Image 1 (spheres, rainbow, N blue to C red):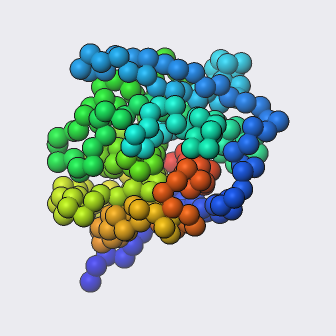
Image 2: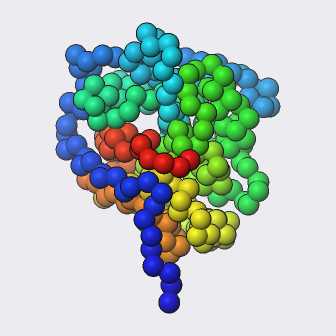
Length: 281
């Protein structure tokens, strides 16, 4: 008989409802305290000059002693580090989503780091012990830069990683092998393609079947897709493996397809459950 499931290390959060598909109020430029978005540049491990956008929450500048958790938020294929804070029809307005949630007391103040992973993202699951280019850049360059230049908490309990579409591969390829670095993984509209599904299970099964792995997720592993999403079936296939090994998770199906209208809503929903107050690291 298989062992009985047990509760996670942190209490199971109540997942907030998604806003309605046509709702634009949650990402509006409202009359609330606003954070700051700034551009940072760094040199990666291969000597390439790289850029990222960084959201600093309201009062970051004035409260010089406060430290913050960090969300590493990844764009999709063909995008760059500007997409999540762009306010055009295809932009994420992530800064306004966070401003509004923080003002309402629904999300913790956090630093949000949005790097440009266009050149390093891979749709191939990382082989055991072999970090892909994006993972190396995160571990060698992005995280050290952020933790040197910003007042963030430098521990796994205060690092989350999220991404849409191609950025979802970054979340899985970087986050799953490095649960010693990240404690929360959020995948929006993504999933390995059919020819990579076996490699995904083969590469990660030792991790997934380890009974200690569940305790590394302070928030359940999260995947979402729209009901007409081109990534829906791929995401369902990934989730079938997650379920096979009993990893606690949230699966969210929404209206709409592979589009920013969904990814804004995903960020709105998940930002409210990030960085829970509970014991353990």
